[in-house]
Image 1: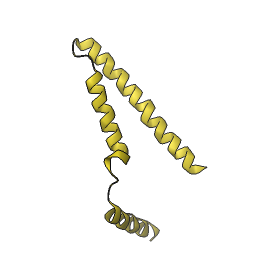
Image 2: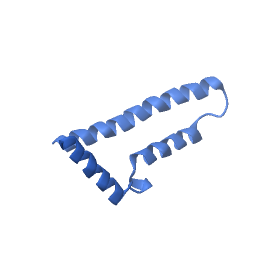
Image 3: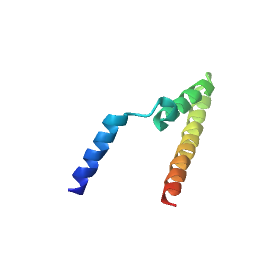
Image 4: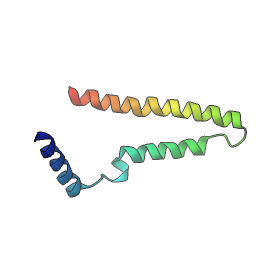
Length: 77
């Protein structure tokens, strides 16, 4: 019964508030980050592009994973 109440409450909150504006939405931040990576990526050479892509993926995981971990840790304090 608790699960149903939680789901209904979440649904009502979502309908009432909707998604936050893009400047506050983490998915929008990730999209902007990906766009930046595409702009900075080397345009010549498959090897350079591949290595830059690998670097950007690892950096993205560290950045967004670190932010998620920090938020989770802060919310448990």
